[in-house]
Amino acid sequence: METERDRLIDAALNHATFEGMSQTAIAEGARDIGISPAMARVHLPGGGADLAAAYHRRKDAELREWLKATPPQGRFREKVTQAVMHRLLLSDRQMARAGAVVLALPQNAALGTRLVWDTVDAIWNGLGDTSSDVNWYSKRATLAAVYGATVLYWLGDDSPDLADTRAFLDRRIEGVMRFETLKGRLRAIPGVAPLTDIATGWIRKPQPRPAPGRTETATNGDQA
Image 1 (cartoon, rainbow, N blue to C red):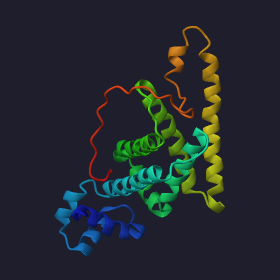
Image 2 (tube, one colour):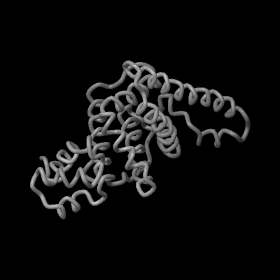
Image 3 (cartoon, helix red, strand yellow):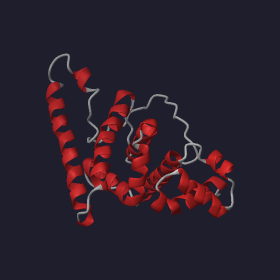
Image 4 (cartoon, helix red, strand yellow):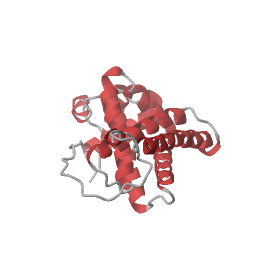
């Protein structure tokens, strides 16, 4: 059921194209649907940052639905590539740029980092990741770095069908694969194996194993 907050976000996003992810867009959206500025601040106390986060999380929710309905095919690295590219295509680039501007502010850095983490977590979960212990974190940290760099490249890419972004992403993944090869060699050295387990390795399909009890961090209503 759509809430008043949902309606405010919808209305504010209609103004974000011209006003950016800002308090001005929120105020105009509130006026459009007839709610007071005070109530708008209750729904989006962080102003433009909250509006940018709401847009981002909506697209993550769409990604989760897509991964559930249309699981990527091919080798595991190809599945990751498909998931990342689809997540980019779900976003309107102008809206994403507006969100990036506000989330790049120092006071919003932690929120921006959390949003990227939530996106890569959605990708890994959607691809059936069953890793546990330190591997659960290292996979997400590695993909977060790849995803973040790819988003920045995508924001300025005007190539047909985002061919340049796809090539950039492929190069980032290839770099991880080369590290995987090095990691395999290092594991053969006595005493080094425990250290290499902390490194990346997320391109390989994880082997099923029982996951330890892990409490999921509660998130607000923007997330599915």
